[in-house]
Amino acid sequence: MNILVMKFGGTSLADPEKIQRAAARVARARRRGFAVAAVVSAPGQMTDELLSLARRVARRAPARELDSLMAAGEQISIALLASALSGRGAPSVSLTGAQAGVRARGPHGASEIAGVRPARVLAELARGRVAVVAGFQGVDGKGDLATLGRGGSDLTAAALAAALKAWACEIYTDVKGVYTADPRLVPEARKIGKISFSEMLALAEAGAQVMQPRSISFARSRGVRLHVRSAFHDAEGTWIGPDAAGENGVKALAVERVGVRARVSAVGRGLRPEDAEATRKILRSCGIACRRAELSAFRASCEVDAREAVPALRALHKAWQLGRRAA
Ligand code: ADP
Ligand code: ASP
Ligand code: MG
Image (cartoon, rainbow, N blue to C red; front, side, top):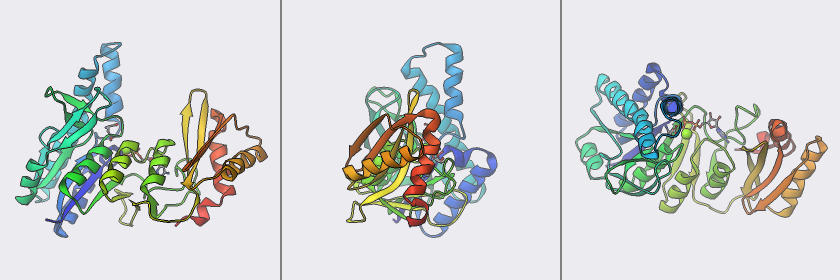
């Protein structure tokens, strides 16, 4: 069986029309000869809405109950996507994390994957059905629902792809791939054709929301090829793969909030003190003070006042000509 894992994020399942589009994509992959395991997130902002609902009934809801509540979002998505697939004549079956064999361990709300027993999914695929699996959830040693940290459907997808020995793990989202910076903040940002696991991990840890950091570590350790692409366009997205020898230097930027400040990071392979110094200089030339600097092999960061985060990002993007250089 040539197995493909296709993960759809919440933004790609936000309304009935988008669910239909996701179903059409899955059905097309199936027609091309793939046995498809689709991993889904909760529709739209549902996870946040469920959390705010919990806050309205209890100031501090127990973590176990929050997991039970949050997991409901993904369960809505599996039932809807499987129904949309059936409506298109593509046989399918919805599976919760537990039914799909996703075992979790660790604290509620931030569990890790202890293992995946793929027998049920494999049996469904062998029968010619699409397995529609709830992301973000597993079952712990006590038989309780456990969630995998925010953005955890990416981790489910990577773990399922490893367990199924899938050809690749496709991450369908609302942007066309991984960009040189968040395209919502930097309009000149460019799509990157290929990025290594280590660069992508550094970018995710630096705040780029597009993939959950733990999913990248998992994919790197198990050699799962990731392809981040648009749920709404056909073009190739960004391939994330082995840390082959490549060009050193800054490849992309990310920003994350740190209290009243923001940490702006330049990410790339083999970064040196000169790159950190250049970051500071570029910011200084725009009148932005770097309050605290940090450097590691894949990341040079500066803390700036939060209101200066976006100007800092745009200034660095322009100075390094990331829009032009990227693949
Ligand atoms: P999903 O619902 O598919 O899981 P997310 O909201 O988690 O989607 O991630 C997609 C978002 O990540 C994009 O809409 C984009 O604003 C943001 N993002 C941040 N940094 C980047 C980047 N470097 N490249 C692409 N997207 C990024
Ligand atoms: N629905 C969960 C969240 O909002 C998991 C995910 O989207 O990957 O964090
Ligand atoms: Mg996400």
